Amino acid sequence: MNKVENGKMIAIEYRVKNQETNEVVDENIGAEPLEFLMGSSQVIAGLEKGIEGMSEGETKQIVIAPEDAYGTYRIEFLQEVPKEQFEGIDLKEGMTLFGHGEDGRSVQVIVKSFNDKTVMIDYNHPLAGKTLVFDVTIKGIREATDADFIAMGGGCGCGSGDHHHKEGGCCGGNGGGCCEGHH
Image (cartoon, rainbow, N blue to C red):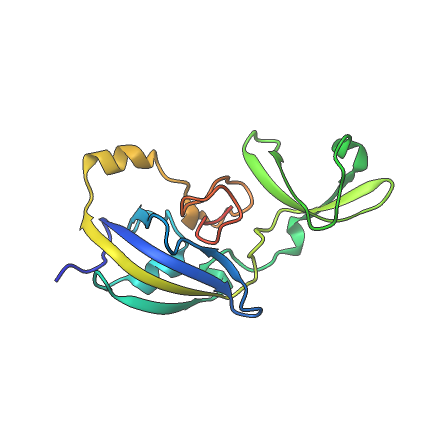
């Protein structure tokens, strides 16, 4: 029987919730399955560990600790910056902003607070420090082809732990999604 293992293309359907609030934070139920190369860090480490050995058609609930998802919440990822850097933006606490870091890479930040002079921004992934509960169904397992490797374009390195520097969703989203790996 075909099982989920490294080097295979895996297609999954999933719903993921924040364990603490039971809020659905991402899902693709009723949409195209997410397809990724197992073992390539295209999805969070805890999801890869959790589905390893599953069979096509199998459904499983996987609880993923922050360390295997988007990391622990890190105070050092908070930064106070001059408010004039946000000129022309109608700032609101909790809003997500996208920009470029000093190294030119895209970054996503959350406005934590602001006053007349400064803005406190947070480079932590929105799900950092959260335990996630995945309900996942394996929709397909197949051998990877050369075309799959070309289409990956190197992936987004979700397993790097560098979760505040990457853009786009590793689960096919455009930021904010739960499978989007470490941003």
